[in-house]
Image 1 (tube, rainbow, N blue to C red):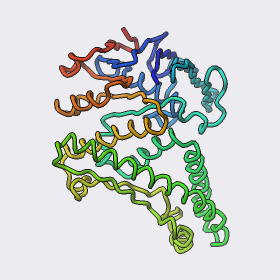
Image 2: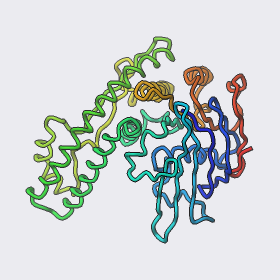
Image 3: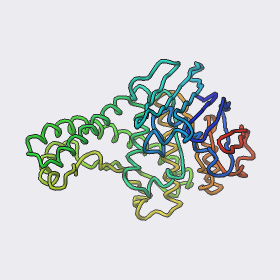
Image 4: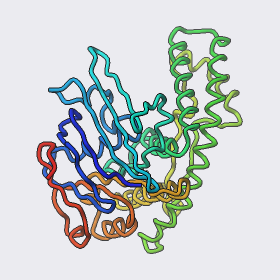
Length: 355
């Protein structure tokens, strides 16, 4: 799979009529705040229907415009197709629509997997150090690409959670809570099962990559830590009714799940050095690529947003050697020495214009 061209108007500061991209390495360089990350974000939006950074879709439309349009021309298994994403401000509401070959995609679950992406940013290098919500997002965005059913389960769980939390603020009786408890248990158990399988799979791959980087000196393991037991889900929710009513929120559930990263059996988050944490994050992100390839038979597109400057020379070279054969779009402020020996499509970015 690879992106052949990207066009964008009205999206952030981008003014791209039709930018061609090579199947191999594409380097976008220029000063900060010129549109390099926006270029990657436009691709991410077409894959997931949401922004990496903005909380609201309205923030993605240029201040001087009322609408935005992104078009990707892609090729998958030798078959060309297009993805179009539209955003339009209509008063206080922002309308979003995405289509494939001009056929509207009605539901978000039908969008996932159309464009296979792995995004790697400096924030991902802080995956181990960040809070649990980042590690849950790490799981969810990857699994959603591979399983529309998982997306549906996750959406229904959070819909029920929102309703239950709204009810809790009214100081309800326990009987009324049980209606939403059933929904949380039904979908939560499915999510736990899928997340556990994903973590088992990714740790098997990431541990091997980590050993390569550390030359066998370190062993990386990932452990899924569900916020609630699948087998005791209903019982735990029932026992927490009084506490939940008192606090006005649901305290137990998959929305508190986490992943524990260990290096040689020791918590990387609490005791790992910055270098160890970054290596663990790098190994985990590279493992995502392998999982997608194994699951779909397709190579994903890799987006590297100013990551190379965060890695030392050895890890830079390792990363570039591991992604050989993938279409990769790299952003940087300058052409790092490690890239000079690679054949690449090099584009200079200035105020949203690419040359």
